[in-house]
Image: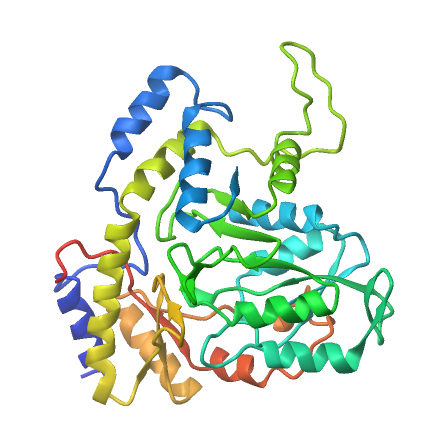
Length: 385
C-alpha cells in the first residue's frame, strides 16, 4: 500500500469520488451563467462594449470596497497595466517575492524593469515586512525623486507583494514601509478574491490591486483580470489606456497615448457577473472543505496550512507542508499516479533562467517552503456539510 494512501482515500471521500480523476480546482457553474451568456449573445454585444462589462466592474468594486474597478482580459495584463500606471519605467527595479506565479515577474519585465526578490514569512507565504524593511534600510538610499538601490544605482519604483493561495500577507505593515521609502505599492491579489486582512479586502491597501478570473480561480470569466482603485482619477486613466487610449467620438478614431488592447469582452464579463452572484456560497463551501482538511490532519504529522492571524482567507488552493522534499515528492507521485491531482509550489522565480541574475535578499523562508508545499484538491464541493 502507498505510504500516503490514507490521505488519498480521505480526499476521495470528501469529493464523493471513489475512482476517476479529481482535479486541483475546477470551476463551478450553478447560477445564471447560461442565462446571462444567452442575453449577451442575443444583444450582439459580445466584445468590449456592453452592459455586463460595466456591471461586473461595479459589482466587484462594491464587493471589495474599492472606489473603482476596471476589467482586463487577464490578471497578467492587469499587473502590467498597474505597473505602467504607477510609473514603472525601463531600467527601474520592482520588489516582489520569489514565491509567486510567473505572471508577477513577467509583468515587471514587460515594463523593461527588473525584479528584486525579498523573502516571505512562513506563516503567510507572502512578502515579509521584516525582510523588506531590513533590505531597504541597508541596501537603499532615499533621494528627492525616490528610493535607489545602492548596489545597482537603479530606482526602486514599486513593490508587488502577493497574497499566496488566497492567504493575506501583512499588507498593512508593507504599506507603511513602502510609503516611508517612496515606493508605490501594487497588491497582487490575483488569488485572493474573498480574502480579508483585519477586516479589509485584499487589493485595497495599495495604490492599485489586481485580481484574476482565470479558469482555475474561485470565480472565473474563462480568462480575465481586474484592477482595483481607491483613486478614481487613476481608474479613469486605466480605462482609457486599456481601451487603446481612444478619445471618445461618435465616429472618428483619435488616440492620444500609446494604449493597450486589454479590454475584457462583454461575453466574459457576463460570465463573471453570474459567478459573482455565487461567490459567497463558493467561499462557504471552500471553508467547509478547509475545515475538514484541517481536522483530518491534526494528528497525521502533516501540516495543513491554516489562515494566518487577523485574516479571513478564501482558501483558494489548500496547502500541505511536508517535513522534507523527499516526503513531498513521494506524496506527489502516489497521489497523481492514482488520479488525484496534487502540485508542488511554483519554482522560485530566482531559480528560473530569466531571473537568476536578479538581486536577492536572504530567501531562507522561500526556499524552506518551496521544498515542502503541496497543493491538494480545492474545488467547490456542493454537497459538503
